[in-house]
Length: 137
Length: 466
Image 1 (cartoon, rainbow over the protein chains, first blue to last red):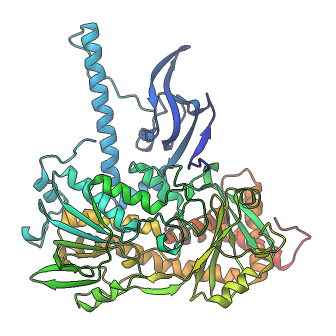
Image 2: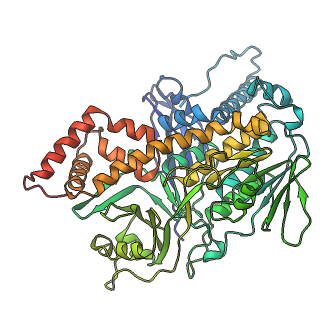
Image 3: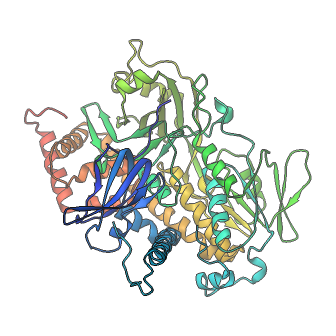
């Protein structure tokens, strides 16, 4: 049996998106694993991993700011691109698609909240700024 | 997953429908029984999205999905009579919905189309050079095919079951309307009362006649005959000759609108669409030199592992709903010739949303479900114009040559503006609405380039076809 998947294959270390690039599409991981990293003045900060089913790059569909982090394959990954036109066309006739995106964004905020709480409890900082923006890719 | 409307069921409804006509008795409530007839994509998508949305609303519904087949058995008994293409747009939308077609279902991921005519051939690459179309089996595949594959329909059926739908492997034989509710019967079983009946049975089902006979406004869609066959060629031959591209034929044959060879893992599917496809037309197509040279065997076109002449919907049901009844997928309204599974997804999701948030009276469904169907029907009317024009091009040698030349030069050019490639890609794949395709053909740059290529094809300048 073959192991065909839709999407494009990215070899180990290949970048799917690069920090600072202008984006006009989002992505869905089909196979393999990717890592999210932020590169700041020569320093690389690891932000997390993405597994099959994970969606990333969605903020680029709604705002025009550049990608704020990079995503690259670890050991090879298959990634499907969702283009803006297809998504917006569908949202127009099916608001449930937008609802699903809101659920994803809500889960991002919840994840960020728990990270902030975790950081607060580790550092003992009582009044850490809650206005830290979510990491948009 | 977060419950977006948790604890605010009635509020969500008020938000969704500020001007309800029906009373609360026409809303779906806790414990209501819903029958879904047909476990193909339309029925499974409906069950999945209804239960997902009901979960968000903290509503407990009993969804019973009637499907006699299990979509595992090889041959006609386990099949759903379809070419088995998941379109580019549907692949993306499913992924957005958290439904990723798994590798065990995707027999071949497609990254291009090769257009064949008598004056040459040209390959059209997928936008972004990515494999964005999935070739699948709708059932257990042709006889003697390897059995390790999971069918697309089984995958969706399992998805609906995981959400809480209960599959009843029974054939619904009759429908009655008594005391304001639909009642269903299975052979040898008692009649059972439901609060809502969804019909996703497909146009080949005889049950649609029974629904029509109820006299509640539903009438069957207009259909024509298509042809689908499978060839067992083996993985190596498929890989070598067809690769990861679909092969589309534009031949000057009366009644033939569209013909495609779709590579799967070890077999090849041929789908012929047009006006009442019959055996004579099938033979004429298979004997065409453009088709014969595609087959890797010295003996020409091999024997067919299985074949069928299914009916396909070419003009949707004028009223795909009635009191407490909805008709989705092919039983209601679908896209003309293309992306039938995508249309099943759209109408099933629209039906789930309308029934849950809008109500189940005929008037509720007219207000909340019909607009989605009407949009597809209106787009099909434009699609008929698109196919008429493409038919004119298909039937004249000089225009076929112009189309091939224009597409080949676009594909060879690094420029991103590729109007003919884009139009053909969207016609073949069904990825864009016909209205959008039609509007693109009105672009003066498109018309100018086409006119130039038509002029060149009338007076050839020693150019070779692509």
